[in-house]
Amino acid sequence: MNLFEEVQKILAKQLRISDPARIKPESAIQKDLGADSLDVLQLLMKIEDQYGIVVPDEELAGLKTVQDVVNFLEKQRKN
Image (cartoon, rainbow, N blue to C red; front, side):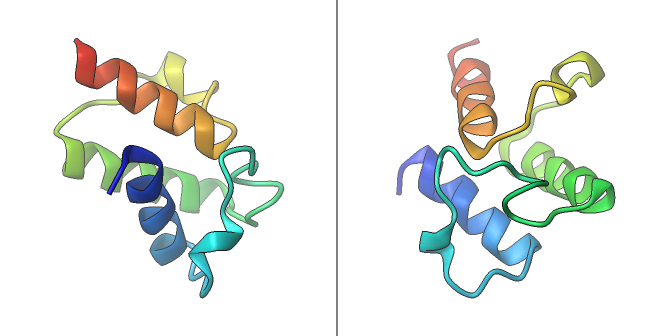
């Protein structure tokens, strides 16, 4: 499973989306997937736990789309 698929699976479970294929890299987490601010916070906590990282507040504002989250995680893996 690649990183996008992992994020897609987490989002589908978190947001109760029955068809994960509906979640595309360009999907806006709040606008397209219907997440509210609490959903986003819970998503980030799940990602932090799963990947053993901390998402800095200044990075948080830039995580608008699914691809933004994937790019952030890829950058964290390289460091």
